[in-house]
Image (cartoon, rainbow, N blue to C red; front, side, top):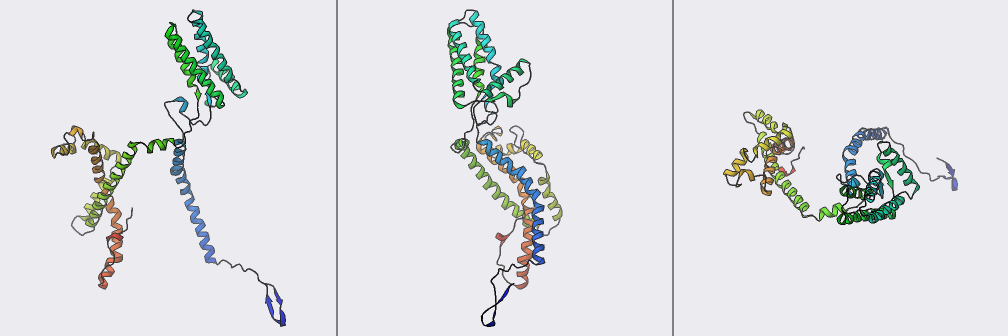
Length: 367
């Protein structure tokens, strides 16, 4: 620090910011924090890959109209394309079939106009150099009976061209149907099928934004499903909480065979879910299920076979299945907390003779 003489022989100090040095304890604490973050980094990456990324990917796919049973909507498309593989598997054979019908004298004038329109449509598809190059490559592969990759098969088209081509293809199909209705064609089914396949080769963008969510939120079935889920959660969790807390208080008492009872409670919880589901399936069976028989005898259902075929009949058996398994897990969640509660609050108050200011509402749950 610089020191300069001041007035009247008094030394003054210049104002300079003093940076405090970190102690060894602070450095050690910083290094421990960095090491802790380093340890949890693999877990965070694993959670991101396994849990968060699939959710984000599902949301992304929900913004598109994806349909696995429709070849033109089975993948994400943000622009207009034509499937050259599908197109070239229909177009040449359609022209050949039309030529055969013309040579046979079946509506030659009308079919000649349709053929001319098909040739003009084909020229529109090859209007761009990139599409024409892909067109020739796909055609060569098909002629040599080679497999065409999806990247090569999809040729990008601008919006106007794609809509014009699609309109022409649909018009060709309509005109062929009109010809078939007025003239007996030798290959009617073949021509109509090939013309329909041409229209399916045009792929429109399937981005729809939040339309799926709009449709679902306006669907009464979704709100009914949400209501059933909320009701199921409230009923099942409420009953499980009461039964689980009661069992936890019971097994905390000292009585003969307490260890055996505690071990027995674990058995239903240790049974695999698949095995448990099969057991309940047999119990609810509409012909031989013992639970279905009991419900019929006490008048809850009119017949054993109708137990799982009605809304109420399917709802309460599902809740009952949860009551037979989950309440046996809750005691082991409450029990450690209850022991801590007794050790921390009840025993000191008993020794001092003071009334306890805490109750079971402060009981922690070790789930």
